[in-house]
Length: 186
Ligand code: NI
Image (cartoon, rainbow, N blue to C red; front, side, top):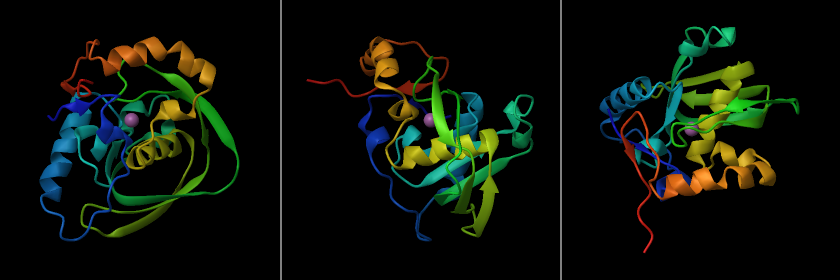
C-alpha cells in the first residue's frame, strides 16, 4: 500500500491534471490505489491523496451498504470525472477523509448530480447519483480541484477543530495506516 498524504501537504491543494491516453502505468496505479483504500478502510481515494496531481479517483462504497443501501456493490474507477448539479436540494451529513484522520464534520452537499467520467479503459460513462453515493463522488472530485471537505464547514466549526488541524500539519498525530506528513516549515 502507498502512504496517504495528510492535511497540510501542498499536493492536496493543487488542481490536478487531466489524464491522456499516453498516461503510463495506469493499471498498476489503480491496483495500488484500490489496495491503499481497502487497507486504510476508506470508501474513496483520489490520486492527490497518494501524492499525484492526476485526475484519478477510485471508489468502493459497498462497505457502507448497511447504512446506505444505494452504495451496495458500487465500485468505480473515475478518470477525468465531471459533475453536473441537477437541482438545488442539499443534505447535510457527517463526512470524513483519509487525509484528515480522526476528524469528521457535518458537510452540506447537493443531493442530485450527474457524473461523466472515463473508466480504466478510458471508455466514457454517464450516470445520475443521489444519497451517500452522490456525497462520495462530490468529496472525491473536490480532491481533484485541491478542495477538502473542511472547506465546506462553518468558520466556527473550523475554529473549533483548529488545534487538531495544526497538530496534523505538525505531524503530531497517530494513524493506523502509513501516512506522509506535510513538509516541515522553515
Ligand atoms: Ni477525502
